Image 1 (tube, rainbow, N blue to C red):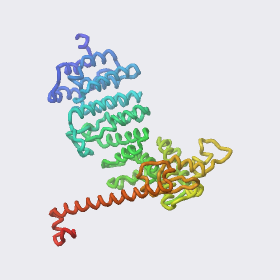
Image 2: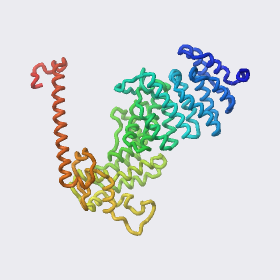
Image 3: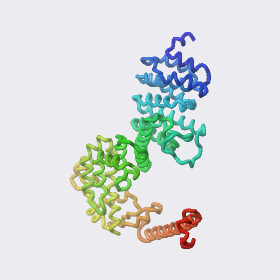
Image 4: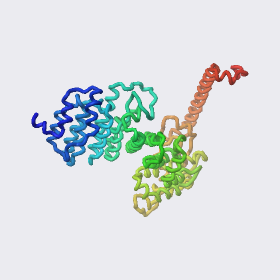
Length: 477
């Protein structure tokens, strides 16, 4: 005990050794001590920190234990020191006693900031994921909100649900920096996969909007890295969900990535939400003018050639590389011919492969142009027709059928049927799919008619409807 009395953490540990603290005692004794806290050590001292951590029981005083953990993470400089700090963080997460950290939210910010400064991104992401998963489990165990049908709120105070914390945001950011598939899968499932009920209660009031934008932006990058493109588009769209007083770099970066992925997935230029301020929308598009021009070049009306879009992509190579969007650009480049082929289906019922290649300018695409094919110049040019036929097979689109040298375009509604081999969609197979699509459409129309009749009867019973229709009979309403 005499050895410990000389410890730099004497005051903090003495408070922790008084036994379990209730909420009132925590607010009057421990919180004032932590609010003005400054790390008593100037450099990492393994003996001092280990001794302090051993004397504080996280079950009785989680906040005191967490503060010593934060100091140890801040002070570590070597791999050995980082491992000592990592063991303390893992114990904090494994105990499942993080309720006090929710009562004193600044501690979550301190812990997230400390782990965010670790040079080993993979280690930091793993530790943050441990803490985030423990927090999520704690919130669920406390039954803050168990109503699965509750409407998810976008801000304000809430008495329920899994709430966004600084640990969530930093965990997702470090996951992007780590570039580890295993970590991407874990964070996507255990952190991003848990819906949030509230976004502001555990984040400082001045940073709530930014925290949500960063969480959505980096979350979209995690989903995109795993190939979950629809989830990535949804995450990047949520960046614009909250009102803002100005345009941020996060919103511009999200708009750029969303533009590339949306054009690659859907072949159309994305739109910002209708409720988004027009002045901010113009500012974002101004900062991303090159991407707007690329989207315009890639999304022409009707049948068009690939050449302008391919040329625009080539001109933007340096911009895309500087923005770290080369991967999304490559995805867009490979997906472009598919959208141009489908646009031909709105005009033509069938085309020869050679004629289709001429209409869409397939010879300009890097899949065909020898000078763009991995930087190798071939002695003989690639057969454009054969390359396009192979591309159509790889599309595996039930609305675009390769029948020998002819490409046939089926009605778009047929794509609602299960995917079948291309050969099964020719002749009688195509007619059957179209007949099934027509029958489904008839059934949908009948169901809609029944629903509208029911709504009409319900409205007829309301006071507002009766006043507006007092001269009309119910049958004619």
